[in-house]
Length: 345
Image (tube, rainbow, N blue to C red; front, side, top):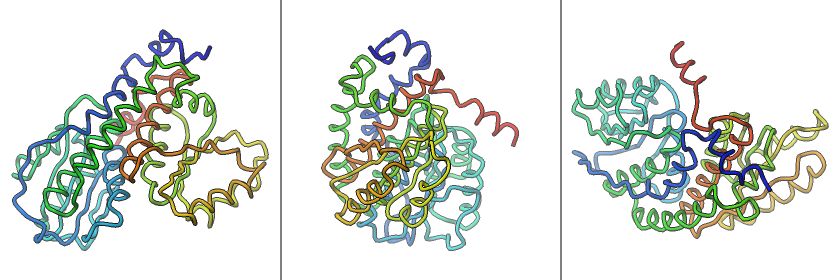
């Protein structure tokens, strides 16, 4: 019997209910919020989403989702400064779950100076206050989550913004389809589902005590990044991510030498939506590095389209990382050192 099948052991470390919050992921996709925009698509030449960590994840998911359909430039900024091209015909979406992210507040203030179109997405904090004081569109998120765990709500909000401006079409139907897929899936990863029938627990056990590399194709880069963030914050373990084809031009050779005994694990997010060229690159890399790179844990992404697979992968990563944190004997919800770091700044 796996230790992850002992509910009392899970409760010992998951005292803040991270697994219970993860079970609510599908309901986040229902979070249709009311807001009004006083501009339209014709007023917008480019879109920039500003955010850090978990608050930027939703935008990265949407970039992958709409990469072949957007007719306006769309950039995600993880830092203090807006691009020089931003002006009065730019739509700036400042996303900070806490509302107190200094980098995002800096971008907000710069957007005000250049008279950009502004939308603020937050649960409150200083950014919410600034939006109200400056009479900017404010979309209030439900509080009580860790930013990384509110990502799915962020995807829904961005979909509503882009659809409301007629920049994308059909987003609501695709979100609804993804929600239905997740409703079934998360129940399969419930803590009361035993390890022999629980994919999330099985993967967590294989990853225990190892540094983790997560690989995906470029069209699923945001899902692999979500796994990396979840491993860092939920499991308190070092993790990295990379994408094919880029990693074939550099990181591939990093596996060929030291250390010979590598205390690492590799997860590959594989999709039937990837091209034959991408799938061949995965296969040839695994064959070429056999005995040098740890045998990859290959995960076949579920879903019929890219957003279903992106959200399914992201939800699975949430559960895997929570179970891995429990195996590591840590509380998945706590991020004390990040808060201490912010205080020192």
